[in-house]
View (cartoon, each protein chain N blue to C red):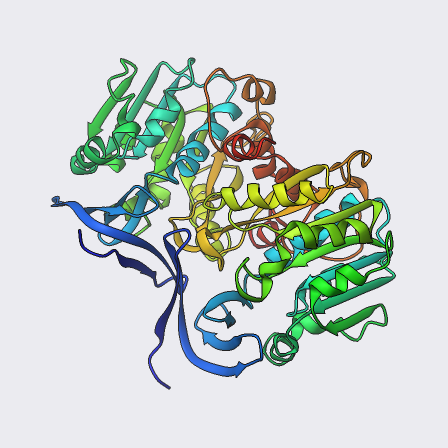
Length: 285
Length: 285
């Protein structure tokens, strides 16, 4: 047993860093796309890094996975067909499949090794992978969305890494146009949208690209996520112009849901819709 | 101009760390109580450390200061007399004095040097120090509360450092008894209450000490605070048994307030009252 050491991720765009006390490296693989490492920590369970960037920890990933899925699924009137682009750790898929009305959930991540590492070191996130409604593809998400039948999808969740490297193509007009085409008229696009404190400029650019692709209304929901830069993160929901009610949600259904959640609740959802003044000012709503 | 370096604070109780990219040390003083250092950062303005622990940055302190003051002041029916224990950077005092109904705000911090450094390096936080309603004392907060006239205060805000070192006496039954005595029947005690993710045990102990001192109802409000461990922080409000309405708040007044806030709003306040399920489970509400 060696003494614990500290592992830091310096995040250049925000000039801030996050660190964990780690006891040992458990695993490592170099995939065709990126380097994936697993560490054991003293307080956060297992920790996954991709190319040195913190992806998730055992202890706090529920915040992100619940907020990437349940707000959109309780906003859509009756989500049946869901597509997850990225999301290779399978945590978002697990949350999506908690909704009994979902008939099909496709997860398309370019890197099979992320899922293999998740199965091994974050097995609890993969517990719904064998659900007959789930389909796991290891393929290019940009191509998958481009080839998706028009008007066939209710919710697209873009659960990607940062907009550099393999995920760069998931943050631009061309990709969002594919999403727009694949979504039904009342469909919802969800994109992880970085820190609402330090990266508001990026959220603004992302919304501008979505608007160029045809999306008409946007809502950015903040939530805590200790393992990501600044500890405060967000997802952005986009709908087509004229989508009824836009971001009102099925509050009674959320309150009466038959499955447990740890962070998400109807009240937390409503709270996340109350955009703080400085965010509203920067984003125009 | 030397190259920027990274300054990390390793936080042992949570096994996690926060870091900033700093360009230079601007100032340093060893007071009778603690060592205070000021750094210049690349992205967060100025940074104050006390005994190596991050206290605040120019960029993100509004989150903490607004949430330590406005929820309590909009919960109380008519707050006139406010006491701040700690709070030497004067940011909470500034927020409190934005409420036109406040007639007197006493700030009692044991360490005058914290305020002197704030005046120099965080001047914007001190802009209300000359308000005739403000009184700045540099004295022992435990003694101040013990000597406070019974039933004379509407809101006590404990804006302290962590429960070690100079602030240790601000987290126990004896101190809370003094607060209880000083508060009117409809008074409110506010205590900064650490991370609602990683330090739930501490919040539970704090509430137990408050209960021993006579307080009857409690509410923990979470908020983002990137510069503190895990990036997610909280304040806990306590009221005497039988306090009418407990944590309902003057929502119309909050919505119609005549002063600007950057994070706080009526909607954000309401959102913070929606305790996430895992927090409610750990704290019993």
